Length: 518
Image (cartoon, helix red, strand yellow):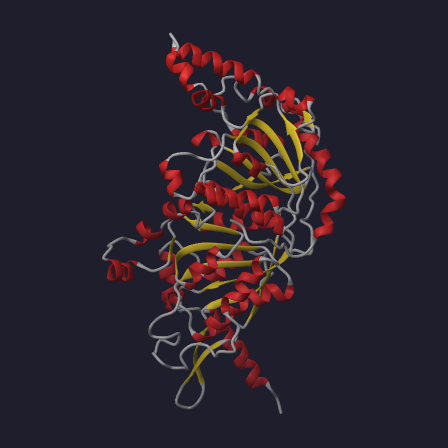
């Protein structure tokens, strides 16, 4: 007896599965300028490293004689691969079959993706293009199975929530993404979207039927919408760029919360001192400057990877390296609302801080904070609640913090830039206080200014007098900062700090736990 017939059928089914939705469906995908899911995995993964799970999952079709005639594979491709030598779990919808809307086997494989990452404690990558469920059912034939899951089934979102606390999750929107795939897309630590993709709770036809709003997919959930809504972190022009960003994001993080992030060899001198830093902050208080130039001058050359740039733009967030060590970076951008904390910026800070604490990334904060954004729009956006929540997140940090007071720190919002037991450095351009000088003078001396013979002259005199009292030398003299430094010393000082905190970093390995926040 030989098993030749059966083993031949295994190979045939595998070959049929690789056809995906068929030649015509693959051709249509390419005509749209999009890769298939298998091509996407091959682009991201190290060459030849992908090992698929469930190649034989799907629906066989037999001829009248009982011979295998065709095979419809699961339309979710899942398996292990390595990315830059590190193993990941990776999967995504096959849009060439049912537009990515799950068939029965595809649904089972997609549900297993999080379990796979949790079981083997490896990062999870999801490459999304597809819709959620259909009124016709996953088999496309209506009531082909009992309605709903059994009462004893594990809630599907339990593993989706759990995986966020244990391993890095990076996702991409590479075409239209709606329903459950959209929810899974945002259930991640980093999400990237191709500029011609869409992310939708529901598509145009459903929206039109329910709300009488006639909008295109782009108007509902295009990249311009969601890069500013906070749904998506980054936007790229091409799929290849999106996949490259996922690979870069993962390079800063450990495989799981029981490990520290990898340290890489660094050829950038730790004592490198950029001359431009000394005068990059103008002496004129209201004149803006470029914070990103400061970040790039201090961090390892070429290492700054910005995230969520268009959402809450008064705050910069990103990953970088200092002397080869991965760090999280936050900084104010005074070109938007003078750097003030808006409701969106507060939400961005809270989420970013939680990610850094989850994966043991020390946080470096470059401070130029004028306070919470004011005005009626800010009040309607619940800025005080979101801002206080962000401060609570910072106060619950378990990772080391270093804060560099680059320019201003005013008001309650300033507390969001200084973690517990933080290391605080000040530049000579720093000014601090309860309120900015201009606002403080307007409130405290309103009557005197109004009654003065020359109100503007008195206002300017008072502002200059009070500004002198906010000198960073006074804070240094009172040991209110660890050191007042020449800005050119910043990189060397931060590299020294990372050496000091290294022994404490391994003490807090494991999941990050928090309490309720405002």
